[in-house]
Length: 375
Image (cartoon, rainbow, N blue to C red):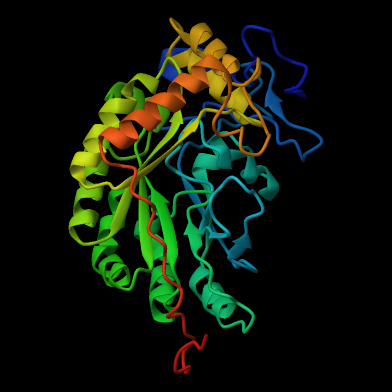
């Protein structure tokens, strides 16, 4: 029979209840996925779960294969109201992300589409197939003041789907045509397919790239970011883009005490040696359904230190694992978060990653048929 699960009440103080307890067996662990279950969507009233193993008549096991759901979106450029994000506008050609990073804050956004922030986020990828056309329509608006637009403000614009659909490439081509500046963040080496285009844009000061690196330990990366490329490959991205004249930096996010915070110096040193010129970091926070997903993942993969890591995260957010206050939520507070902050500042200067971010140039923005902008 199907049973209803309330993620707010059906949990224990030390070990959160998981919706698919049978996955705890090693042979049933879904390799290649970060989340191991689908927590309840907060916007849906009821949730069907498997109550008994023998209840096969009214239950089918989830298909782990990735599904691409093509969508005719109504808009592509979104205004960013969060004052601590560092961008005014963003665009995301894909919703959901096959990379499967267990900590990803974007998981919660998948609930708005009627899906779960867990496995659904990784294997039900919404493809905004008309994204380039929508961007062109947006940039043609006479009231657009040409502020920089962030690519991957939510999910990675170079995730595996990009190799098939090439929507990010299409967006960049439109930006290049209009001289529209864009800031990219990614952890996928697929960005190198567009090196020539990015190089052309860089000559006009239209693009900057942040490459996300969280760990050099492959055993950790394989379970924490299961469908991403290696740190070695990400350093290659920094090197090749930098050599091509593209302003490139490194993103250390998130730093997780007890898991990867000890790697901060190594990552920043290697990134600086590879050509990165600026950097950023975030402290782990587990908002919404990510709390359940991360807790389940942590205890399945690192049972020997799970309690310690969990409590260190709590210590970084005033006894909780999430803080929604602007300016505080991505930096944390207390001695643990302060230690991470001080290390970042030290190594940022030591490895010359403290160069000011390139001011992207929107002064040459023009719409097709226009002679240029007058100021």
